[in-house]
Image 1 (cartoon, rainbow, N blue to C red):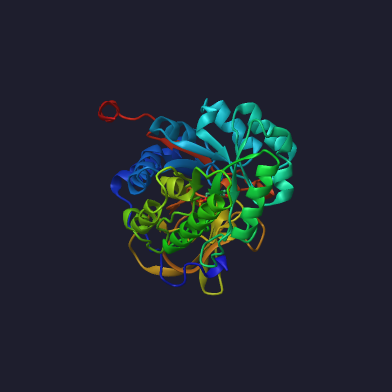
Image 2 (tube, protein in one colour):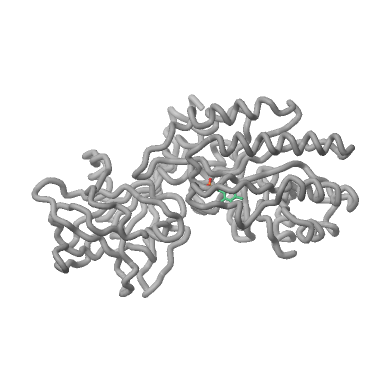
Length: 397
Ligand SMILES: *Cc1c(COP(=O)(O)O)cnc(C)c1O
């Protein structure tokens, strides 16, 4: 699947600017390759763009796609909230002094220790999607507020997160009724329409269904729900262009406007915030001609930063620094001794020398997070850029 990802279309990425090239080359000179260049200005830009596109919605950055301390710090300074799923993520935000009130814990299936760790930190909003999970909160009923996660299947997304998690509207009502009987507070509903969802109407349908469930809750004489969490899934440009975020969110806002004013809306964006912020830099370790193609063996691959080719379905725009000359049918391979470790086959590239650099764009989400040290090839080092906001920018706010 990953192997024919780029077809014969050559490398379809906008050319690098001279400034980009200078920065990449000086970074490799200083730190070696492979590298991941994390630009905090793009984290800020993405957060602000989504904030603008979803006015009144509290954005909880989901740590899962890029759980890097610099990202947490940058977003905290922007006024973001956070979405946690594991005790490791709790530790990370705690280390960065994120106030616990800014966090929610959204893993639908938890061990008692996971709940206790989050509570000890001060996070008291959790997600359930079944009665077995609800029962785990009987002993914490004084402290917690829960969201009930609904399932909306989406075969088009990179990851359909509603196969593994979420319940039907009928099951949600049963959970809410049972919680009332057990004196557990239900704060609201949540869903995740699937990661890299390119059709905003998936959100619109889910919001309509949740709205109906909220009305039924009131009709049943249960306490009105105060929160709707519309999850993550907001799309970014890889080799395929997606709708600009304002246009994407317009129908979502329209659906949200129909909710009662008392309902507070949250979202849990992950990919949208971090994917465009990272550029990968790998260098050619060696090369060989095999069956009419030149195989370039890079120092990063499927078991490293390009793990998303396996786990995430993403097709990253790739570009070589060397441009011009004859284009030759080529293969970009990862460094390990495993045959599956191929990044792209049948692509047209200029003739590269050992040491030449291959750049990957939109490499921030589900890349380094799922990388391994297989075969003892060390993961790419992440270098943070523009960590400090320029003084002038800070003054303007
Ligand atoms: C992974 C995940 C997210 C982030 O999803 P993106 O598609 O990266 O925006 C948000 N919420 C939950 C519960 C998740 O599991």
